[in-house]
Length: 429
Image (cartoon, rainbow, N blue to C red; front, side):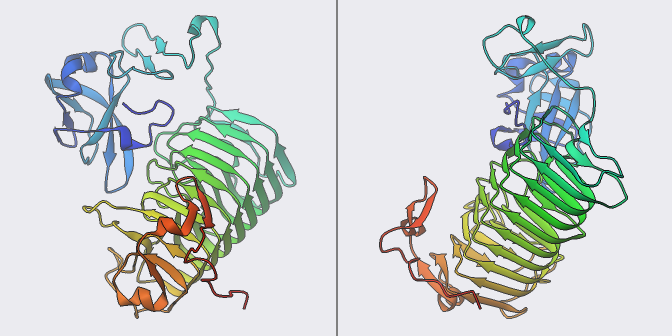
């Protein structure tokens, strides 16, 4: 069963014996419980939808036999699934989980996070959607030093239509938010000229993004820590101009439709960030004049950088580590460190370390070759590839781990005699 505080990561889900959009069969899970009990208790299926890369919740509605349950229509399913909201020990099996009886007593049964009895301690919940909301006229406002928890729309934000300015969001904690459908954000701002979001901590915000800004100018997102976020960690959306994403640390961004950092807009700098063990640490779409400099992007088995179908104009990739590409032979993402759509132009990549293959064709827009758009690759380091394109544009090494002092310990300094030492070129010009 999934982690009760981070149901988004479906690595802990099961693979069903058989499935459809309205049923799942799994003898190892349903058999020991009994499908009728799951109906009587109002249990839910959580199922992964591969095409959209999301998880959907559906109430169990029928019990055809002991190993199969019927549920409300998912629309699609890929067999990766789990159960929730049952008193059975196979479902309610760890601290932090709870069961809501919606049929009989209307009680909540809670497994506490420590040894304390629930009746002797404090159990909190919220009935409001938003934590701290700035109104339409709220310019020159600083929000600092708050802990915001357990809301289901946004923790700190503003959803107005008029333009405000001079906003500072600093030194706050926004934790354990939860929303069904990944459309909300822990910190969210629209229509802002001049906003600084710095030194905030975001932790275990399930089924929602971390930080989202759109239709804004002069944006800085710096020195924030994000861990176990259910959707994209930092998202600078359409209409963002003159923005900087600096020195943030993102870990375990592995939920639904997740990217570590996503940018749209123009005149964007993404520098000195660490995105560790996260799906698609960096995605770009419909953007221009983007600089990506001195970041560590560890995809944890996906694509370190992806440029989608709307592409990018004038992208500069300098001195980045692109690690952790997929090794799943059945996946189209296998061995991809840099995925570029055919609509991208003006790409310069210098002094980057790419653990696996560089790849250009785009599955939707059609395939294209190395010479089909403007790109310059100079002094990069690639891991164990045979295509002559790579040997012409950088060094090819057989074991990239030897290039670092301790990759497993995240010490990415060059090791003694590393191929990285003096291997770059001056980018100051």
